[in-house]
Image (cartoon, rainbow, N blue to C red; front, side):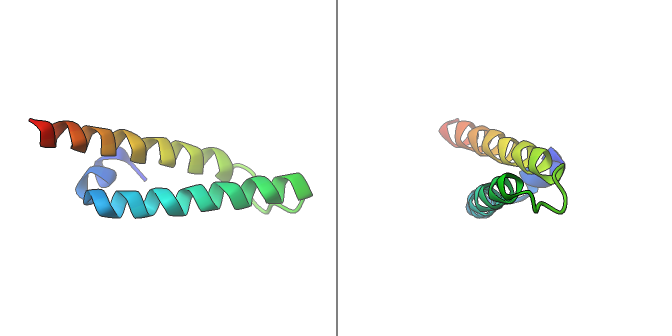
Length: 66
């Protein structure tokens, strides 16, 4: 997901998506270690999405301090 779409979400929605991404990353790493991952490149994409989510959350917190 692009950063612009992340910015359209509320802080609560971003936190929920970040939790889902954390769980997905855990599951993908487990699948990779077992050798059954269907799409190994999804791990990098999920990690980047998680980083974007954290960045946008940090931006939103900075705006609220004003």
